[in-house]
Length: 383
Ligand SMILES: C=C(O[C@@H]1C=C(C(=O)O)C=C[C@H]1O)C(=O)O
Image (tube, rainbow, N blue to C red):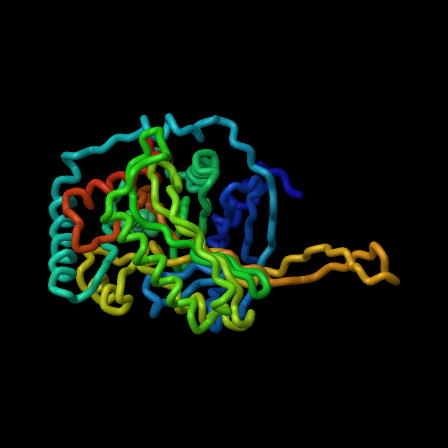
């Protein structure tokens, strides 16, 4: 196993050569993993049968970039938080906003949200997720140092830094799983509804938020219909989940795929879910593409390990081979929705944030929700 300091040294030279790489840590884990592509080729996902790390755009028509397993060096190391900033108190206190600078942005976003509400009331769609971006001047633009701050601060998120000449440099700390699967078992989640964390996770939710989250759960369950062994599907009760300075409503969904071959179909059916797009999917997507003032690029797309080979040691229980161990190779997929993320460019960070709109939404509240969400990335950019 490589030492963290040695790894980051290696990563620096890789970055200088502008070769694709990804470094990431899964929620609740200690180990940081990395894939450094050995050549400078650009690979795209074609049929979801590939093995490697995928970085997919929000718009399903756009390419999904890929670091293939067999074209990269992989690393694993422990990176222990040293500055102790991963505390609830810090998240709450680090709240700060420059309102003057945002006045124009606020107007533009509220107009967009109002247009969304009007279309919902006219019956065009039931839910739409509308986003904006914000440019933040970065005091210390070293992407590796920003990544380390994310690691220190967000132990329960999927934290990553991704670089590819086709996409630029992205970093994030997302609370949302799109899909996990191993052999034919899978897990997904419906995450929606947002309020600011004020030191208490036992909170009340407004009816509007509950309904907004239910739309996501129902959609995921419906998408599973033709692809899974539907009798195997289990759904948890909705509960409050903390993500940085925010709380969301979350439902966990597990089940079995009709066959492991159906993985690609399932990803296609799920993405983009109404947690980041809307319902019905096509109408909401069209509204977003025509009306949002930004190109989302990879924000609210998905990223993660696709069909990564993992070895599990199992005991054979046949009597004449007592206690004999054998290694079973299986393929594991772990994909996350690319939220609470930013793109680094020429010393600036572009933060992407959005929120779900339903008929009961209020434009000013939706603005505040995006301000709150922007804090997840801003907290690691301020001095
Ligand atoms: C769209 C975002 O987050 C999503 C939207 C949420 C909402 O509308 O309440 C909550 C969690 C996420 O599923 C974002 O963070 O930009």
